[in-house]
Image (cartoon, rainbow over all chains, first blue to last red; front, side, top):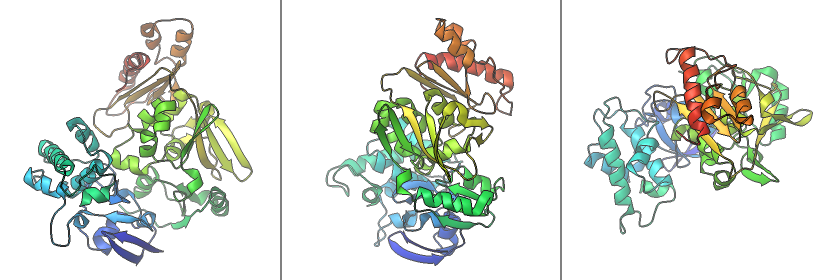
Length: 172
Length: 270
């Protein structure tokens, strides 16, 4: 069937099989390779993307379920001039990755988390990322990265002057 | 893993969904969040010929008060149940339980109706609804019927829903000041309960202690006759039939049921 959706701000229209998973649509049809396929069983979170601004595991969403909706991948967090989002920068500055496989999913889950809870405690960050596994077990720096991003987003004059209310503001 | 081929239909109303089910018969399955169904389809535990997507039916989603009940539309997602100020005030155990399901990504997709229809004996929401003593509103070709939660779960992954019926809403009693407790024992984040206990107003429900979520009847009777929490909790595993797996054997589950029931009766969460 034909689906029409917005991916990273670009309107897309494609003919897909109903059984096509969103992760395969993104990686293979659109050649967006940031989101990874890890466990393929809704556990590890490596395939996390935003669907209408909310984190979802794209191995457990059909492309047809995204019809008419908006999808954001880690590629879509980067501005046209190459500037990374506040969350992406925070992961780099705090060494919030080791091998990097889980990172796109961690970044998208963190972006969604901060949209819903702009000032999380450390415990809330840990619970908010419970759907994302880092098999290098580099969780401490990942949590530091998210807390640093929250601090940066809450500073007046930063890219988000007020508490963000949806993911599109955290994306900036 | 890629599911086997199927046809995909989008329902635009509950009536439309029911007519699509009637048209396609037992080959059709309803799709809402898909977080129980799609994993089963990927490993061929389910292989429906037709999926009827009900996630875009506005009338099936939302939370509202009606008299002494809170009505939750079937496709209301776990994140919406967990974050609902209405439920936090009127049925806080349900908002709390919804926040224990899976992880944030799963709670953005999974729905209360889907979880109940899936009828997993180890899941959060079936156990919680059993403790709340609510009911389930089911719509079929001949109209609406309301099934009390004690009659809804009939076997492992089996509910009172017929193949041509649609779970349209969940009804729970208003009870913002009712004493409740909730215990879920897991080894890892994100797991299903090895044993779970939900307590609401003298009703005690257990997860993973049999083929369906179960009432701890002996505990409830003991409480009614004035037993202490310790005495009542000691009876929590009576009449249950827990299974065994690599997490726990039946004796260990029975022990957990007693310990966790005591904590839940004390109003603890965790």
